[in-house]
Length: 197
Image (cartoon, rainbow, N blue to C red; front, side, top):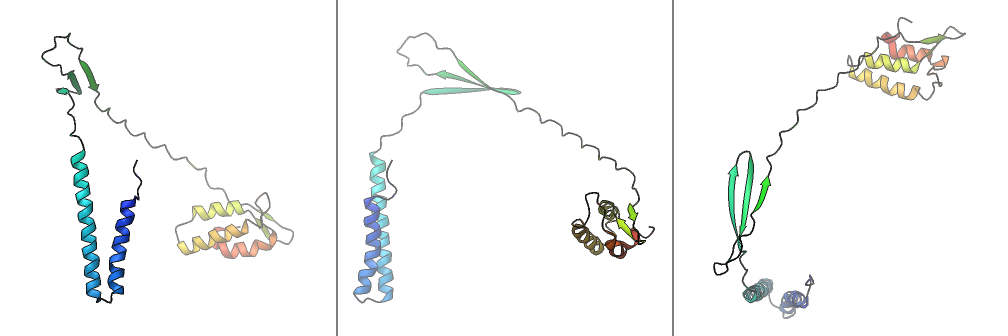
Protein backbone atom coordinates (compact mmCIF):
# COMPACT_ATOMS: atom_id res chain seq x y z
CA UNK A 1 0.00 0.00 0.00
CA UNK A 2 1.35 3.40 -0.97
CA UNK A 3 1.92 5.95 1.79
CA UNK A 4 -0.58 8.81 1.93
CA UNK A 5 2.13 11.51 1.82
CA UNK A 6 5.05 10.60 -0.39
CA UNK A 7 8.16 12.53 -1.46
CA UNK A 8 6.39 13.86 -4.58
CA UNK A 9 3.63 15.48 -2.52
CA UNK A 10 6.20 17.05 -0.18
CA UNK A 11 8.09 18.53 -3.17
CA UNK A 12 4.86 19.86 -4.70
CA UNK A 13 3.77 21.45 -1.41
CA UNK A 14 7.21 23.06 -0.97
CA UNK A 15 7.01 24.40 -4.54
CA UNK A 16 3.53 25.87 -3.96
CA UNK A 17 4.75 27.64 -0.81
CA UNK A 18 8.10 28.76 -2.22
CA UNK A 19 6.77 30.52 -5.34
CA UNK A 20 4.72 33.20 -3.49
CA UNK A 21 7.44 33.60 -0.84
CA UNK A 22 10.12 34.22 -3.50
CA UNK A 23 7.79 36.68 -5.26
CA UNK A 24 7.18 38.49 -1.96
CA UNK A 25 10.91 38.71 -1.18
CA UNK A 26 11.56 40.02 -4.69
CA UNK A 27 9.24 42.95 -3.91
CA UNK A 28 6.61 42.18 -6.53
CA UNK A 29 3.08 43.63 -6.18
CA UNK A 30 0.28 41.59 -4.55
CA UNK A 31 -1.36 40.95 -7.90
CA UNK A 32 1.83 39.45 -9.24
CA UNK A 33 2.24 37.29 -6.10
CA UNK A 34 -1.29 35.92 -6.51
CA UNK A 35 -0.72 35.33 -10.21
CA UNK A 36 2.58 33.52 -9.49
CA UNK A 37 0.83 31.29 -6.92
CA UNK A 38 -1.95 30.49 -9.41
CA UNK A 39 0.57 29.61 -12.14
CA UNK A 40 2.45 27.37 -9.69
CA UNK A 41 -0.81 25.63 -8.72
CA UNK A 42 -1.72 25.03 -12.39
CA UNK A 43 1.79 23.66 -13.01
CA UNK A 44 1.40 21.16 -10.15
CA UNK A 45 -2.03 20.11 -11.45
CA UNK A 46 -0.60 19.59 -14.94
CA UNK A 47 2.26 17.49 -13.59
CA UNK A 48 -0.14 15.34 -11.53
CA UNK A 49 -2.45 14.84 -14.52
CA UNK A 50 0.47 13.78 -16.73
CA UNK A 51 1.73 11.31 -14.14
CA UNK A 52 -1.78 9.88 -13.69
CA UNK A 53 -2.21 9.36 -17.47
CA UNK A 54 1.15 7.56 -17.69
CA UNK A 55 0.29 5.30 -14.76
CA UNK A 56 -3.10 4.50 -16.29
CA UNK A 57 -1.55 3.66 -19.66
CA UNK A 58 0.98 1.32 -18.00
CA UNK A 59 -1.76 -0.83 -16.47
CA UNK A 60 -2.73 -4.00 -18.36
CA UNK A 61 -6.25 -4.03 -19.83
CA UNK A 62 -8.88 -5.84 -17.75
CA UNK A 63 -9.64 -9.44 -18.72
CA UNK A 64 -13.25 -10.33 -19.53
CA UNK A 65 -14.97 -12.91 -17.35
CA UNK A 66 -15.78 -16.04 -19.40
CA UNK A 67 -19.33 -16.62 -18.14
CA UNK A 68 -22.62 -16.38 -19.99
CA UNK A 69 -25.75 -15.77 -17.96
CA UNK A 70 -29.25 -16.76 -18.82
CA UNK A 71 -31.94 -15.39 -16.58
CA UNK A 72 -35.28 -17.17 -16.52
CA UNK A 73 -38.17 -15.50 -14.68
CA UNK A 74 -40.69 -17.76 -13.02
CA UNK A 75 -43.20 -16.11 -10.67
CA UNK A 76 -43.07 -15.80 -7.73
CA UNK A 77 -39.40 -16.93 -7.56
CA UNK A 78 -36.57 -15.89 -9.83
CA UNK A 79 -34.15 -18.56 -11.04
CA UNK A 80 -30.78 -17.79 -12.58
CA UNK A 81 -29.08 -20.52 -14.63
CA UNK A 82 -25.33 -20.05 -15.11
CA UNK A 83 -23.56 -22.11 -17.79
CA UNK A 84 -19.76 -21.94 -18.01
CA UNK A 85 -18.45 -21.21 -21.52
CA UNK A 86 -16.35 -23.89 -23.20
CA UNK A 87 -14.07 -23.49 -26.15
CA UNK A 88 -15.46 -25.13 -29.33
CA UNK A 89 -12.22 -27.06 -30.10
CA UNK A 90 -12.43 -29.10 -26.94
CA UNK A 91 -14.91 -31.94 -26.84
CA UNK A 92 -15.57 -32.39 -23.16
CA UNK A 93 -18.42 -33.74 -21.18
CA UNK A 94 -21.09 -31.11 -20.52
CA UNK A 95 -20.69 -29.56 -17.11
CA UNK A 96 -23.67 -29.58 -14.81
CA UNK A 97 -25.78 -26.45 -14.68
CA UNK A 98 -25.66 -24.35 -11.56
CA UNK A 99 -29.10 -23.20 -10.48
CA UNK A 100 -29.40 -20.31 -8.06
CA UNK A 101 -32.89 -19.73 -6.65
CA UNK A 102 -33.86 -16.42 -5.13
CA UNK A 103 -36.91 -16.70 -2.90
CA UNK A 104 -39.63 -14.10 -2.98
CA UNK A 105 -39.80 -11.69 -0.07
CA UNK A 106 -42.03 -12.95 2.73
CA UNK A 107 -45.14 -10.99 3.53
CA UNK A 108 -44.87 -8.81 6.64
CA UNK A 109 -46.51 -10.08 9.79
CA UNK A 110 -49.57 -8.20 11.01
CA UNK A 111 -48.97 -5.73 13.83
CA UNK A 112 -49.90 -7.07 17.28
CA UNK A 113 -53.04 -5.70 18.84
CA UNK A 114 -52.42 -3.09 21.55
CA UNK A 115 -52.69 -4.38 25.10
CA UNK A 116 -55.78 -3.18 26.95
CA UNK A 117 -55.14 -0.48 29.52
CA UNK A 118 -55.35 -1.72 33.10
CA UNK A 119 -58.40 -0.65 35.04
CA UNK A 120 -57.63 1.40 38.11
CA UNK A 121 -59.42 0.69 41.35
CA UNK A 122 -61.99 3.28 42.42
CA UNK A 123 -60.51 6.31 44.15
CA UNK A 124 -60.33 6.10 47.89
CA UNK A 125 -60.60 9.06 50.22
CA UNK A 126 -57.53 10.86 51.46
CA UNK A 127 -56.31 9.20 54.56
CA UNK A 128 -55.20 11.27 57.50
CA UNK A 129 -54.70 10.68 61.18
CA UNK A 130 -56.03 13.17 63.69
CA UNK A 131 -53.37 14.42 66.07
CA UNK A 132 -53.76 15.27 69.73
CA UNK A 133 -54.00 19.01 68.95
CA UNK A 134 -56.94 18.55 66.58
CA UNK A 135 -54.74 18.92 63.50
CA UNK A 136 -54.33 16.04 61.09
CA UNK A 137 -51.39 14.08 59.66
CA UNK A 138 -51.87 13.80 55.90
CA UNK A 139 -50.68 10.87 53.74
CA UNK A 140 -48.39 12.05 50.92
CA UNK A 141 -49.23 9.09 48.69
CA UNK A 142 -52.95 9.83 48.86
CA UNK A 143 -52.28 13.49 48.13
CA UNK A 144 -50.24 12.51 45.06
CA UNK A 145 -53.08 10.27 43.85
CA UNK A 146 -55.59 13.10 44.28
CA UNK A 147 -53.39 15.54 42.37
CA UNK A 148 -53.07 13.03 39.48
CA UNK A 149 -56.83 12.45 39.39
CA UNK A 150 -57.66 16.17 39.31
CA UNK A 151 -54.83 17.34 37.04
CA UNK A 152 -55.61 19.29 33.89
CA UNK A 153 -57.97 21.84 35.39
CA UNK A 154 -55.25 24.47 35.90
CA UNK A 155 -51.71 23.67 34.64
CA UNK A 156 -50.05 26.23 36.91
CA UNK A 157 -51.74 24.89 40.04
CA UNK A 158 -50.91 21.33 38.96
CA UNK A 159 -47.25 22.23 38.61
CA UNK A 160 -47.15 23.97 42.00
CA UNK A 161 -48.78 20.98 43.70
CA UNK A 162 -46.39 18.55 42.00
CA UNK A 163 -43.34 20.48 43.22
CA UNK A 164 -44.80 20.81 46.72
CA UNK A 165 -45.41 17.05 46.89
CA UNK A 166 -41.83 16.41 45.79
CA UNK A 167 -40.56 18.40 48.78
CA UNK A 168 -43.15 16.98 51.21
CA UNK A 169 -41.87 13.44 50.54
CA UNK A 170 -38.69 14.36 52.42
CA UNK A 171 -40.71 14.99 55.59
CA UNK A 172 -43.06 11.99 55.35
CA UNK A 173 -42.46 8.89 57.41
CA UNK A 174 -42.13 5.33 56.00
CA UNK A 175 -45.92 5.02 56.10
CA UNK A 176 -46.30 8.24 54.02
CA UNK A 177 -47.74 10.32 56.87
CA UNK A 178 -46.62 13.93 57.34
CA UNK A 179 -46.11 15.52 60.77
CA UNK A 180 -49.07 17.48 62.20
CA UNK A 181 -47.16 20.71 61.60
CA UNK A 182 -47.98 20.41 57.88
CA UNK A 183 -51.78 20.28 58.38
CA UNK A 184 -52.33 23.96 57.64
CA UNK A 185 -49.94 23.91 54.64
CA UNK A 186 -51.76 20.92 53.14
CA UNK A 187 -55.20 22.54 53.64
CA UNK A 188 -54.03 25.79 52.01
CA UNK A 189 -52.14 24.20 49.11
CA UNK A 190 -54.56 21.42 48.20
CA UNK A 191 -57.75 23.41 49.06
CA UNK A 192 -60.76 21.81 47.42
CA UNK A 193 -59.09 18.37 47.15
CA UNK A 194 -59.05 17.99 50.95
CA UNK A 195 -61.89 20.37 51.88
CA UNK A 196 -64.24 17.58 53.03
CA UNK A 197 -61.82 16.41 55.75
